[in-house]
Image (cartoon, rainbow, N blue to C red; front, top):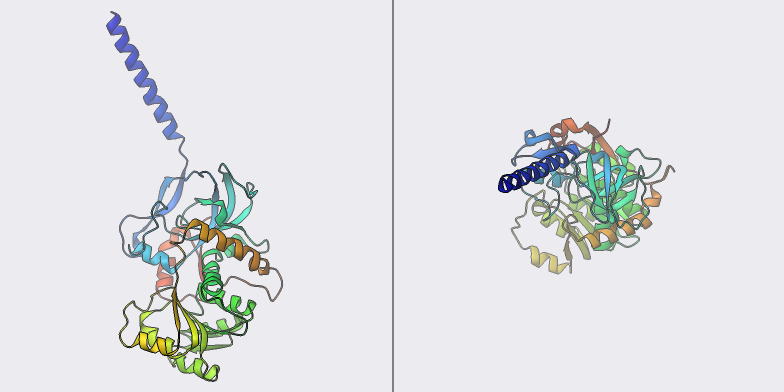
Length: 361
């Protein structure tokens, strides 16, 4: 009898443990997020219900109002640009929203419902994301959260390339390829802010006109003319002191041809291919040129924290309500349910400025 009762007690204990486990599981909060089950085209972007992240020590949970597209998103969808180890496999590198939940050990005084924008390693195509507090910035008060979502990745990239990598100086000529892109439109405005002279390339008269309205001193349609000759003429044969290049391979020779002596060619993308044929090293050497490369997503948390801090101090105050202030350029807006349409729009290369995706209508 004692043995039977003991067995019954054990079974009752296991039943209690099972019930308690099921009860805890039912408390897990869920959210909508865009997932990619298999690499491929935009049709592989699927809206699913997944567990909501919980903020770790030093993190803040953001309720996302909007995110924005980047070329890296297209590569990740195709399986060509995986997230860094340990980061969310949900696509999305920037968001704006409000503070939902505060993790332990925070130092910067964030409060629930604060309007924020953030740089991410991933996780932006969702209703919530947990972010180290060092990567948060206050959203400019006169901008909507949809507008603010267009700032973090593009503007921090442009700031990093110009200030930390190229170390641009007042009066220098800066050639920005893809001058109507998110990074391009940010770079034009930042170059002006730093007292340098921006010139751009783009693939249509409309894109060049927009870049010039933002402050570009000259623009060259790479489909119809030699941008190297255009830069040569604009600078009186001196060339560009800095080139911001997201194109890569197919542009290497005209880039070197229009690079000033001792100039800095900053490569941050390879949309035009990775292969190079010809005398690149010899021609670059003859200019005493510097070939610099940079990525942002794979940088350490400390590097990104320092970048965000520097940007917040030197640039963020200029996003004001004054006519001459900095502004994110928004090409179009989509809803999260139509994320595939947003990707198709970017792949068609029709956008001028950022493509924003609203999570909250």
